Length: 296
Image (tube, rainbow, N blue to C red):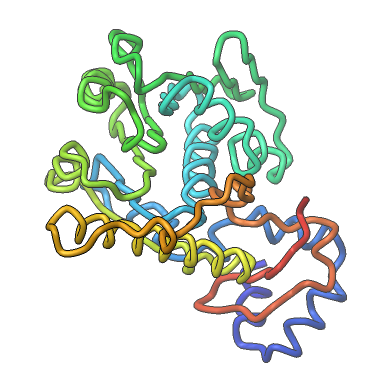
């Protein structure tokens, strides 16, 4: 498989397209499951042994959820009996994104041909080898008192209602095993706790932008950029108004549509599916690009 990827990276765009068009669905799914082959560097775990916290701060659509699910899945698979904490903003968020989401642990397990036992009433995910992942929430720090864990995945920490208390309680319980570690996946925000985590000597930070995810439809990236530009323009006008330099003109304020945006695409790397046949696009920086796939 790795030899095939090396050939694809070196091939022309036309050769890449032909290779995808002539591939079977099973082969494309196998390629998608081998995440390390096509993920970009900032989606992969840090190298070396000295880190305790991996802080991934990146824009929406970067592929944080897929990266987190892949990391946890491989750890639980490779360390029988491991105990993992999955901490989301709420239990509902953790369940919907980290476990049941399109890039969550159940989806990643299926790509690898594994059947995990999901017990939603208990908020617990079990591996055949005895490893377990338990759901916790950032709005209930006391829930993290007591349990011990080998590893933790904290999603969207910047959205937690009680981030400092929840993080500190998690750290007290992150003492099981020889090398306990935590991954934090979050959008960047001016949060004191994020700065504290980033400045710790045992933290390795990675970052990225939405447009770095080569699996996203370019039209989606353009739409996100336009929304950000609109919000930036509105913010600038408000700041100028606060300083007394200009009055806010409601006729020229950016309009925020009430129409739901395609949020399902925000937190994932587009998976290869049967619909992907013939949709191959150039490989860039060693990553597989499947542009404009219809995954609805």
